Image (tube, rainbow, N blue to C red):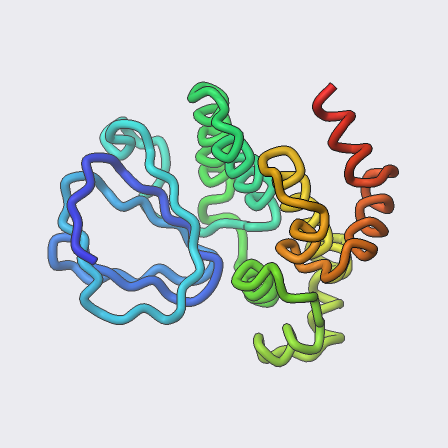
Amino acid sequence: MTRVCSQDVLVLVFDGVLRFSENGIPLEIGAGEYYIQRHGLRQEGLVESDTPSYYFIHLEGTFSDKGNILPIRGKVDFNEMFPLLKKLDELYLFHAPVVEKAAVVYQVLTLLKNQSGTMSRSPVVMKVISAVFADLQKPFSLQDIANQCGYNKNHIIRIFKKETGKTPYAYITDIKISKAKQLLLGSDASLSQISAECGFGDYINLYKSFVKAEGCPPLVWKKQQTT
């Protein structure tokens, strides 16, 4: 990839290593880091990246020219960041007004400013979440995730409870329920299709998880949101 952007681009790396150069200067952005790719610089992917999983946001105008708002590079705590990114995805999915999307983007930037240089990485949590996002349709198996990430199951459970207050299963189920809500409100997909796309397998698994999370079945919840 070779490009020169007219806007700054915020890149948040969940897992792996993203490698590129800016005006010939090589850069590596690792898991748990963010970086602002600056406008007007030639960005090239000359060296192969290490299977990165990342999220990017095009910033309106030339953000990095507006004073010391945010360091160009820093660390990010995805435990706090993921809810904002999910909210931003929902706003784009439903074609929300620009002002609503901009408000969430500034929440993201404010959180990065507050976190910058003060938090430590959580490689276990980020690797597990990244693995799930890479194949959300696949039914969750902690053993499969442990094998993929190279961690013991009990170690993963212990770290998840410490950092999120939830078990890996509960945390990932929340992600899948959030995706199901997006599809319920923003698509014409059937409940069976939604169940499969969100990794619940058959509808009964989606139904049970949804009732436990929201206190009502999916279609009842959808009606409540649209009336």
